[in-house]
Structure formats: C-alpha cells, structure tokens
Image 1: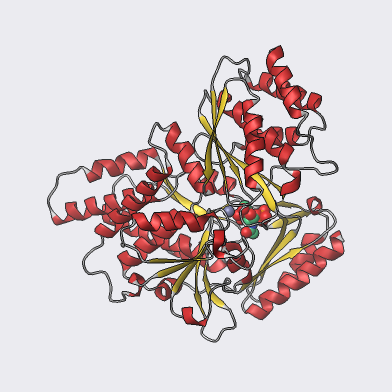
Image 2: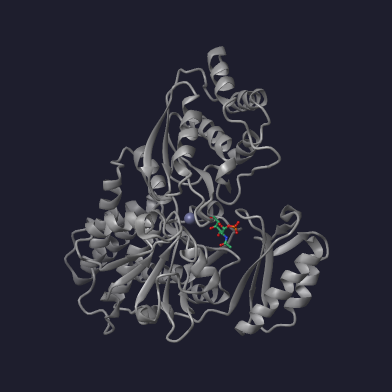
Length: 552
Ligand code: NG1
Ligand code: ZN
C-alpha cells in the first residue's frame, strides 16, 4: 500500500470510531445490531467491498444496508459477491477482524496484511465498483453515506448508490452488471414480468377444474421496501395477476416488521395486522422487511387470528413437483442432476413428501450461504428455508440443454410438448433470482404454477400435512457457549445438554427437537416437532427450560 492510500485510510477512519464494548460478527446474514452503533461497521465494510472488487478484477460488488426482519431500530450490512450470491465465506474472518479493529492504526495494519496475503492491488492502478442499496429503515440514509465514505477511501473505487431497493434486487443488479446485461430496476421488473407472462402463455388448455387460483392475491408487505416494489411490479403485469397490497409502509402508518411480515407470520402462525375475518377464503402472502423471503397463508374462520401457514417447505414442494413434471415431459436421456436443499427447520413431513417424489434431499446448517452453496452443486438446485427464503438455481449446462430443446424443429405432438416444457423451465430460471432468495420472483412462480395446475391455495396446502411444530427463543448469558454439529441437529457443547434433550425427545411420539444459537439475534433457538401441537409445545418448552438451566 502506498503512502497516499495509507494516509487516506488513517484519516478517514478517525471519523468512524468503533462502538465500545461490542463485539460484532458477520453472522448468518452479515452484521446486524442497533443502528446507532453501526456507522463504523458499514464504513469498514465499504472498504472491504472495494477490496473485494479489486480482488475480483474490478467486478461489481454489492453492499446492502438492511436488517431484514429485525425491528426497525436495528440495521445491518450484507455484501453481494460478483455472482450475485453472498460474500465468499473465506472473507468473513477479515470482515470480523476489521469490524472490531480498535483504532485506525490497527485497522490499516489489518488491511495491509490482508491485501498482501490476497495479492490485492491497492495502489490506485486498478478500478473498483460497488453498488449500494438500502431498505426503508430511517437509519439507512446515513449508513449508506458512511459505507460510501468507506468505499471512496480506496483509491480507484467508485460507489453507485441504487437508493431504496429490495435485497434480492440489489443482488440481481450486481449479477446482471457482471454478466454485461442491462441491470436497472426497470430491467429487473421486465425480466420478472416477461418470464411470468411466458409461464402463463404456456398453460395447457385443460388443466384441472379448480380455478380458485385465478382470484386475487392479497400481500402483506411487512411495512417494508417490498410494498413499493410490488406495486411497481404489479403494474408491469398488465392485469395478468390481480394483487392487493397491504402493510406497504411509507405513509400507510404501520411500523416495519411489527406484528406484520413473513417472519412474524411464520413464527407466530398468526395473521398479520390488517388482515381479518373478511379475508377468510382468500389467498394471502407475506413478505419480510427486505423482501427476500415470503410465505403464504389463509385465515381460519373464527380462528382468533390463527392461520393455515403455507411455509417455505411447501413452496419448495410445489416448485419441486412442477419441475419434476416438466422434466418428465422432456424425457431427456442426459438427465440433469436435481438436488433439494433444506435445513433442520424443514418440517419432517415436507422432507418425506420430497423423498417420496423420488428427489434427493440434502441438509445444511441454517443460513442461505450454506444452502445456496450446496444447491450450486446440481444442474437444478432448489433450496428453501422453512421461513420462506430460497430460490431455484440452474447450471449453465442445463440452460444450454434447454436452449437446444427450445430450438428443435420437430413438429410431432411429442416434440411440441417437449419444447413447451423446455420453455417453461427456461422461464422458471429467469423468474427466479439466481443470486439469492427473492420474494417477488417467488410469488410470481407460485402464482404461475397454481394457474398452470388450476389449483386453489387449499389444494396446494393439501400436498401433505405439516407435523405440528413449535419454535421458541431463549435468552441466555452467552449464546456462543452452544456449539452444534451435524447440520446443527446435535449439541456438542456444553457437555450433557444433548443427552438431556434426547431424554425429553424420547417421551414424545414422532418427537424431534434441536437447539442452536441464532446468527442474527442474541438468543438460542429451540425447534420441536411432535404428533400433536400440544406435545410439540410441551417438548419445546421443556427443552427451553433445560437450555436455561445449562446456560443461565
Ligand atoms: P438465525 O437468527 O441464525 O436463526 C435467521 C433465520 C435464518 C435466516 C437468517 C437470515 C430461522 C430459524 N432463522 O437466522 O433462516 O433466514 O435469519 O435472515 O428462521
Ligand atoms: Zn430478509
């Protein structure tokens, strides 16, 4: 590093002292904390993003300021790699160390050592580009400013501020730019709406008698960024889908993620604010605060806000079923490899359903970075967390194969059907975000498939019955004292805790339960399943008590 660069870094970072007494870590999805202590973190991660761009030969990197489903006073920062996926895990320790560097000198020292080790040209000879985006949190504007200052500290680096965007939109833009494609918001909406239209145009004439799916969809937007964006997307759909938007944020009065949103709906299994008895029988969906996940639900008649939840596992099952059907039509001799990726939070009934379809199911630890990485190993990788975060990835090889079939000229009925199936799958690959889970593209695919099948939301929900489950959070003194193994299903430390959990599980029919420290909140999470809801609740509560006893 030359003197000029060194002195810019030293000088600028004096304006961004790190918070005292807080250790920050790049958790399940980047850094998250109370927004008031994040100025120095985003400044420093701005520097990291510029370095990442230099390291990848000037490729565009993304920086998203969001705390997703967390409360409005929190904020956070995540980095998107050139592919539009999450930051490579190899760089997380560097992110942790610079976020926690106590003063400018040690920060510059860490950067110098890292740049040397990674062979990063920080001498001003190379250009770097970082796209910045944020959700609707009030703290976002000044945090973007701090991130911008960090980026601009690296000589040759430029920041491009995309303003308020959804997390997946920013990832999409990063990917598109690096592929040399048009990458504006309008291009994003165009890709989603035209591929949805393609799915609709390819619906077979007779596809079932149940046409409830044609009715309107009502979407709870968690009072977040998804509200405005879904509104824009709906306009591009030219009436092909009737969407009513609620909890859209802005002037609508509600608070981000408070009693609304996919996280609330999925964890509490209750309807969000603004929904009530008059919505019985209607297909409803809920996005989270930065619109990278979604779930569906229907309101139960006289159910006291209780809902039928159609979670990420059932979304995954619908997608897997549709893709399998299209692959069957293709009858390709070179069968693509298909991998379904879930976490331990997946409802056991969904895993059974997918395996019964003849599909290969793989488990990874919680966090999209793990699921995404695993899904990339297949020609078709479908991953979803139960909370509704997921997508479908197609390999280039498979896309080329589809391209070939789409262009075949056979006019036999079989040839025609094959071409249609290839076009449908092509549309799936285009509507689904290839970088990260995307609630808007996911909604469009669900809606397209329901229309294709001619299915009502209830029919979809009946694919299988969820095993009753319960999720709880336990506040403990130090959650990092819990160390797990085996895709987080087994506690290694503290010793004796797993044995205690096992003996509780043994008391319940179809009992399953695991605990793990959250990567985004200061809690230990408990998940249980059992034959009845009462038993699942009891099991989760008794395990939560045991966790308290072990960890205080
Ligand atoms: P943590 O807090 O590590 O459990 C939560 C979700 C993840 C993922 C991340 C990122 C659950 C149980 N966990 O992680 O699936 O979505 O947030 O937002 O829902
Ligand atoms: Zn989110």
